[in-house]
Image (cartoon, rainbow, N blue to C red; front, side):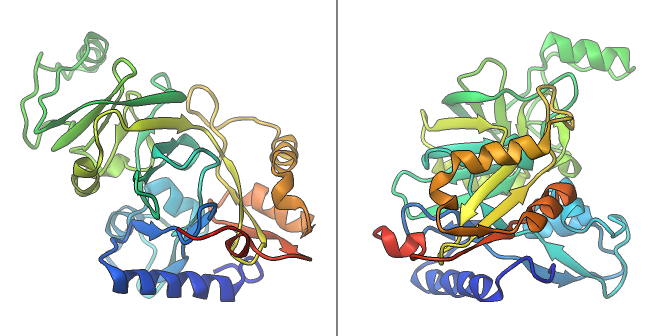
Length: 325
């Protein structure tokens, strides 16, 4: 954990809230309670001690994180050989995307899907693979059009031509099974050709690897699939800079590497983007003493971890101002 970046008391409280929620009912490693209607941070940071055979891909799969977010959170480590006894940071604290809290939200910049069930009071989140260069994932609002268990895959002509050019011809239909890149479940979006689905290649989770679709680990989509009604709204956004207020009114900034329209790292003017984000969140900045050095460090590091950038100088946190669920 980065000294000075986090309030230990706040993270401790998050852990207590999660523990209390688990008493009331089972909560998965990827499900977090929302204690009040405008809660902006969920989860907590923690570390695990690596064994000699551990890799970031393996640890990410075990703990619910994608490959690139593991690298961003642990920039000085070898992702293939962290080393026996090394403390590896698990980036489990998230600022929720700045969108309406309903249905599925996919933030391309953090390679992560959020699901806000209609009854409220909780959020589920999972890492996803997104479109690679030349096959970028779309941005916009849509819905879940249809769902299918044990799907067959009908590769589009463009993908068949790509594979044929690489000497790996594809059949017209790939039946369900271990060779099917759709995995055990798929959810077609009301955007032609775009699907949320499982995979037969776990390594691509949390990376730019797909032909524009959203790839989930099979165990993750197996958990999510039965919870998603047809016509569930889906919002796909690209928010590399996320601002969130903690329970006590302090301001946190979460920074991911910005992606351009082709899904590649962007040359975006980061300073201007942060200033715009702060201007758009006047409600969060009022009564906050900003730490510009912490802001600059966070923007430079792009570690995908919420960083304390401003402490409340007056008033109460949002949880004291708005009724809980």
